[in-house]
Image (cartoon, rainbow over all chains, first blue to last red; front, side, top):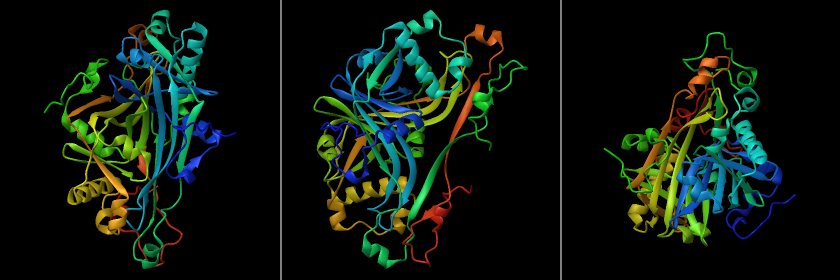
Length: 217
Length: 217
């Protein structure tokens, strides 16, 4: 399966880094936790960090109905980008220094999800992406909480994924010169020990869906 | 020192999360490694991950002169956002789930840096941010490499920083109910063991500026 290649999702630089496999796109979106949403307000670009969730070929976003964000997003053009930084690439030359990363970029319109059942399903997708297991464990949203939340759908129809892995690509002359170190300093992101709220009742245990996510120090 | 508060850098939501201390802004920009740059192309927003470096109240970005990015950025309105995700906030209700994060958002025009001395200084700022010590250690850019690189300056005049820390803020009724866990699952990003290039000469040792950055596993 190939990703669509509209003019704005075709990569003009480093096409060898453009993986066109939809599985890669899904993997980046499913591993990332925060994305960056771009939209145009008063003719100028705005980029904000935002949580999200993916189901099939749709990414769901949510915003408080009290925020200016809802107005800016409703039916408007958006670009949503999720990036994971995997390493610093140290080359023999400063010019060939680089980063190893995985990045998914989606273009499209943010369509508001108003149907109550679909909205609830979208919110479940977002919550389960951020905190798997929380939808079943935590208190469900009240009517008032649902009314305070706007949900948007962004289609994966126009998307691209770019991945850089591996060592630096040095100039052959620099490799032959031989006296400088070259390689990758990998970056790892992990969960650490859960920090219980101070107001937690004494008999409440850490539930398995959080315990299994945490990494022992 | 307060950050400027133009209409687009004033936060309309959760103003209690808006730290107006310039030191916070610097700290986020200095700790982050990749930012997300937003610009408008053919009327639609584009958001791309990009490396950067800060010097005083200027953020420097670079792009290959062969890329469409240079045309899109030159003198155009941009928004540059750097976000660090610090933890998943598990609340007793799905509605109050959140994220702990630090985010810097800058608005302004990308001005091309053409003066050779200033351009070199800007590139040093970018390289030293990505890979401290590399500017002195690695081979300096050739005339050809410099010509292939465009550098842009974005002022910190119009910027905001938003930080969320601490436990979930649950509904008092949910806290009283008492049977659900609430707290934070912290996220930590670390460097791991450096991976030398396969074509490294046998006598080349890992230099201290990289060794000291790496975290033992």
